[in-house]
Amino acid sequence: MYDVICLGSATTDIFIDTGLREKSGKIVYPLGTKIPIKELNFGIGGVGVNVAVGLSRLGLKTAYLGKIGDDDSGRRILKCLKKEKISFIGKKTRGITGYGFILDTYERNRTILTYHGLTDNFRLNEINMNKIKTKWMFFSSLRGESIKTEDKMVQWCKKNHIKIAFNTDAKVLKKARINLKKILKNLDIIILNKEEAQSLAAGNDSKVLVKKIYRQGPKIVVITDGKNPIYAFDGEKIYKVKPRNIKVVERTGAGDAFSSGFLAGYIKTKSIDKALKIALVNSESVIQHFGAHNNLLTWNQIKKKVKSI
Image 1 (cartoon, helix red, strand yellow):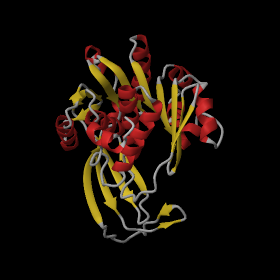
Image 2: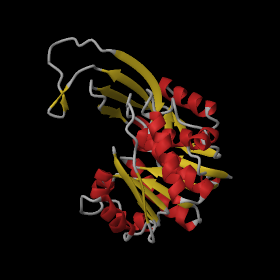
Image 3: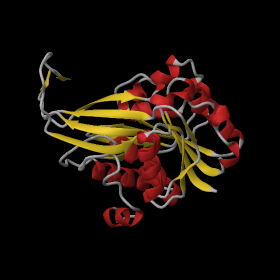
């Protein structure tokens, strides 16, 4: 029996520090020239893997459910999962595993070019349902055929009394004509950034948005907003935590670190307030280093940083 199974993307990530300054909120690349880059780093990413690594480091028995290829990227991912003590219960097949190309600017913002590969082609009949033995399941938005599989798995988990945490991009679900209302009614936890939240409910105030989304079905709603306060709502109380002003090295994986921190914190403490603090500390640790995994914290490290748990 697992504590959590994570269904989501898996990629090899290539971090490219362009050193270029932003112009009107854009990275501008002149045509017909060679541009020397400042630094190149490699890592493993994808929301499904990132959250699984975060949960495992925080002491939960974790499995990753996804589709990867028998290629260099796939082998890198499997090696990472083994190192992090995460069971792979997905599908390995011929084909190209996903890649992410993270382009960082001088101002430390980034644009991500993604190639989803086999991640977008994970069918329900490729899942061994006998291996889905877990207390919780974490879902992140997929695309293509995989989003239909995800929709069916949410319904299956509900019928089998498995608790559900979801980090969703509602725009993708709507485009795929997935019954979003039905999914929302089945969720125990939904974690969104503000832009994602605004695709589910109208408004610009996160304190209002958490309540509006709560009324659509999830038992706990969490909304992050960059450097601004983070809010959560459980139908009775609004919870708030404010990010600290820290030096940012690379933002990739911050949201996934927050998701794994919140879910692990809630599972272990049953406290939304404590889970928010744990999630924030975990995400702030990640953005001070390159890579989505490089500074994810262990439970012992969390306890030293968050004195109230």
